[in-house]
Image (cartoon, helix red, strand yellow):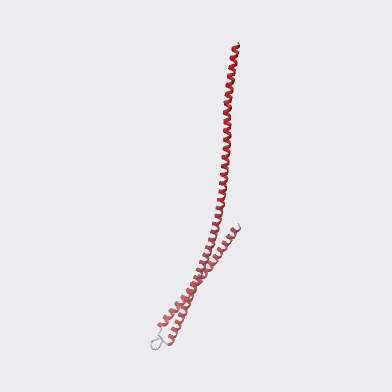
Length: 198
């Protein structure tokens, strides 16, 4: 009973922990997506600014002035910096995703190990129950065989007594018939003697 309660408590705590981690993972993923979207938007603005500055021809000769070229260079530097930030953000997101996947894999592996242990424990319990039941069946079979032997012995004794009783009854009937026949002969002999005397 205690093991069941302990297992139930562990499962509940793991479930709550998983839900909390899922919620924080979802929030982190959303924040990461927002950051990437913001960086992409800023980069697009810088590209538009670069295109605008690249079209400007403010010099006396109709070419780009030194000021225009410096603005273009600064804009390109900003674009490169945004690209670096984007690359770093993508790396961070991929590292977090890999870490989350690794954690999930490890959690799944641990859960698999726990499940395997529980299954093995249940199998061992069932095997011990099977061996106990088999030993009880063997004991019952031995008891049944002993009772069958006793029954056969009792039947043999009873049939032996029945045979003796039957033989004695037959002998008694024969003796009774013999006695009756002797009595009849004796009576006949007495009657003959009486008739001769009369």
